[in-house]
Image 1 (cartoon, rainbow, N blue to C red):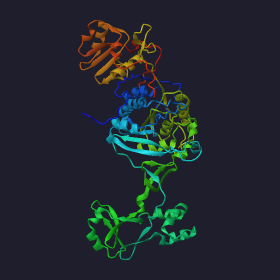
Image 2: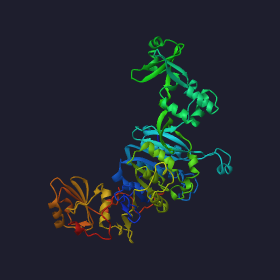
Image 3: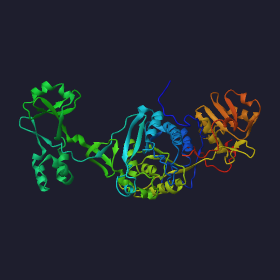
Image 4: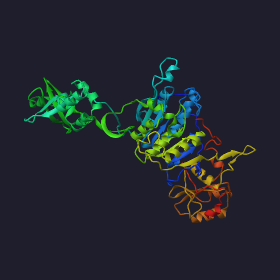
Length: 570
């Protein structure tokens, strides 16, 4: 069956990424305030790291935000951003495929790009996440057409915006609102006469409003209401108190028009207004003008809770659209946010705050696999979200760790004052384990000597799809895939007596896979509920080994030591 798709050099090539374990570096972890923290900072290639997260976090991440290299052709200080187009598409698609698996069913992924790859990024996200799961693309104003940048431009069309591609597996997203000015069209106010019939008068005829207009030397017109709302606290409180009877007019809804003949008869004259309830029980005010009906729309509908950079308050607002203005103002001060410098690559905390505020709740899990200077983890931490951050460069130490330590200590940059951040929390710092299979001096593939028995057992568990959780009672129950299916990994030779010992401890409905260096001939067929494989032969075809950088399942066994004797488990 033919399908519409984007083609590029290298598309479809199967890269068998090695599933590696993640090893906690307890010296770099910061758990003083929270020993049980679930926050994770990972140093290593992000494709390998994402692969390592699959077994534990598939379907668990509520919000993924990534700000990948834009492929602009410029060499940034921290990234080689001049990747050839097809390579960029391969780089992104392989990571997006794993990110799609990690995303929760009710989760949201946000990918920030600029003009160079935003269109192609949209197409590959359509393929991976599904075109029907596309929410929108937001244009974010990240710079202004003024200042030093313009003085040194080529005087053509200047870059102002970057783009957020937003996808979700389900479309149940809560609306967000942004503060707006007073709309002078809301210049009517309802009054009630003795006959119980509403009259609609100009708001500027209200004594208190007239008094405020005169106080500030403003004209007695609806146009002045916008300015008055900005400068007069008295008028602002008046509007809030009377929000249900202050409003504007609009053509009546279809529900009212269907009943227009009855309404025309009810309304005694052209200036009258009556309450009207449609078939759904929604309340309207209807005004008759000659032979038409107009709906009265109260300004109360414009009052919403706005959770903005200035704070949380009830304000006149508009629902947030796909044009986000004002972030260019943040960019002038963003370089030193978080007490780390990250020239030309850092995003403002306020932008990440808006994204996480729209798409997550406290306690939700947030992931950024291009962590950069640590902005996403810093904001998620301050907002009481759990987080996973992945960074491949040395700035995982010099930027991300330093920034998160500063956040935990209570730094007051970015959104700290908005949230009244006082510090606290913690994170665990992980390194990717080295490759499992190396070549010896004769070119033969052997198990990496850096692996001790625990590391080997937990890694083989990843390869075979098991969860590593050694039993305290039975040494062979190292990993499990179900209540009756287990994996045992050993570097020992399996003899007939050794296998019989294990078999006699097994239940009738239990199954066991054994991965070992060697075993007596015929043992692999002796018991129907025991399968035996040799390592490394059994996993050599699983993936490619000894690759630590693709250019662009946390398992935490008991403390890894230089040597662990398996006899301890017996």
